[in-house]
Length: 252
Image 1 (cartoon, rainbow, N blue to C red):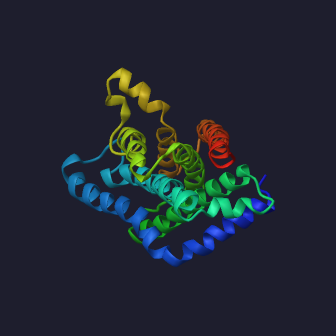
Image 2 (image 1 turned 60 degrees about the vertical axis):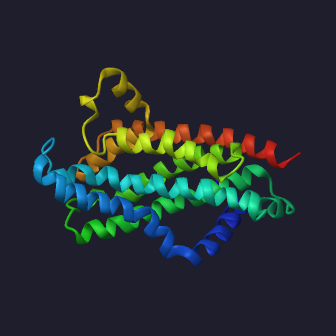
């Protein structure tokens, strides 16, 4: 349950975020759209259909969710670290009757909100591009929200551990980039070696890409709810870890 204190911290972040709204949205939605245009129309001409879809239709759902991953990750790594260290925002908030769990909860809510907004922006872009063929795609921003909860929670865990901005290179290189390329966005993971396919299946983004692709073709199976629950539970686990680490770092 989102307490009023968490909502107020989230509200504070949203007010500040509005000052660089255009830059933030462009930074985390521009890249997936460029990938879609370059690979979908360019490489897609040589690849042809894949699993009954044109290549641009095949990669669109995953690129859609990658914007959610990017938005939550950016806000809960560089943004959160700046608030925690450079700006000393967390210390100022702790002067009020607010605890570290509420601070972290607000950060994850804020990162997830950015994921939701990114997916809404891409929904509009894809609608004008003629890629929205089913009303089920209105659910895509909510898949982005679930994806955002997970990546925001993991990013906050990394932020709690980080000693400087350079540390985030490990997070992006060892986790975000593999998630982007190994989660089935660009090709079926069934073509991987068995050991690599098993690793790919454990990636939360892989599970969300499966659900997104179903929605894209107008389907929604009950097993998709288990995929979403898996990602949410992992997000809650990392939320718990990150609150413990942030508390230990701030309360001395």
